Image (cartoon, rainbow, N blue to C red; front, side, top):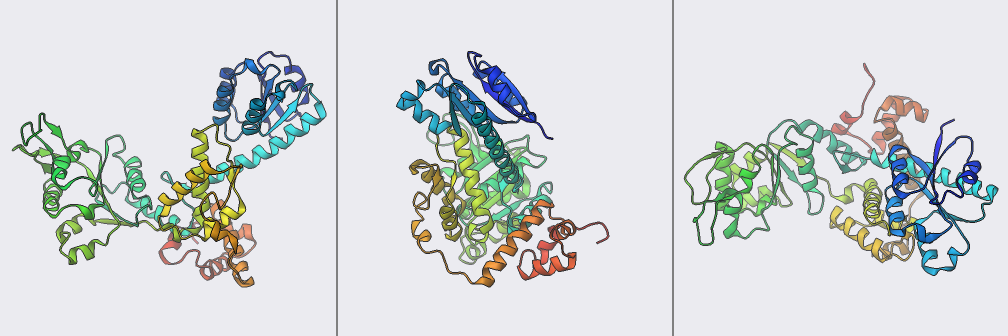
Length: 458
């Protein structure tokens, strides 16, 4: 039987013996007297349950306890408190917000054992969900939908190519995160990652921003300044919104890409630079070329490798994963946050919404909802999506059956690392039948099928 760790923080040591006797045979008991010692145990062991004894509340600092709890998000916490301590309204609020459950002194072994057992079960569920979310993405990006599986497959191929990359995608889809992943997972990861937003720099300053300038090059140039291109030497230069780069600078950038040298503003010396260029845009550059706003020769220099980042409305299966990831990151850095999950109505509303602002809008809505929520569950109203939750869209039996079938197949493929043969065995069908189901449900077609792993010789 798998052992489970139970941690008890008892500053006076008065309850350690009683608490150890309450634990089951498969539970390893650790008892410490300080928050520092508790953190050490938590860093060395995966604890299912944590007990904190408040026989005298003034002994333990509540802020320290909250920070300790925040550092162990998969541990369920139970407060063991004196009835006298619960007379304080402030202490009641602290217990309610920070702990899964509480037990009043003196210890009732049977009742506390039931609480610990229930908390252990909940901790296992929480750990399983956390492990599932960790597997729902790659390269620091969150996503498990078929379109993102295909995108990750493309990313795998281009990381070490060391050629220019052009990322297309709507605003808010996460183009900078993709650019950062290209840097972080490539051979250039130890060198700088330099970001330039071409649409945010005044046109009269952008040349100096990119190329740097010598002292005295213009009024106010009191010292030599290194430009962004030179700063990216050895690493990756990310030019966001490249479509907003003025035509005059497009010519200069083209020369840099051809010659791999720069000259600072006001200078005459050519400086060799070695960088990988990643550019991103939400505009149609070919249309910009047609309108005379973008150089065609620069476009072909940039567009050696092209990545198309899908909008969130095409990643329906990822909405909940992304929202829960945002919530988890927020609560980890804000230990006093009371929100722990989304209501089923909120999840339905998020899956129905089209997300015109894409992932950026989702992040903003979730952050606002966490702050405004009055309960542990984020509601559709907290998200500002209450109108989508009033009347759930009507669905036919056939559509519901297809949706259920899709969820089962996709879940099986994910749990088997996209191995079709193993997934078919798990589902009790032949591999050919599973392919037919995948084709009918449009789970993976064409190039996407190459991402699924087949047995040798299949």
